[in-house]
Length: 100
Image (cartoon, rainbow, N blue to C red; front, side, top):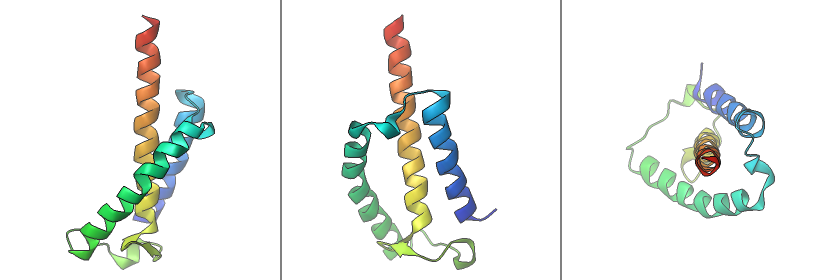
């Protein structure tokens, strides 16, 4: 499985996780998209810094080939998955703790 396959799969799984498993439905809320708009530029800067210094190197055969700020588009997908999964769990656990 390529990095591209993993990144796309991660987005699909996390969207299902958010909407149907933990049911936080952050994807439908402006607060998530506002938070993501703040995080996204930092992700681009970090990706650029890591790839421009060859700290992180990608195998060209394992990625789609499109890059943004030096890193493959797949990195943005994977980053989106991490952010959505983390914030979904944060909200879910907060709701659970408040019920007790």
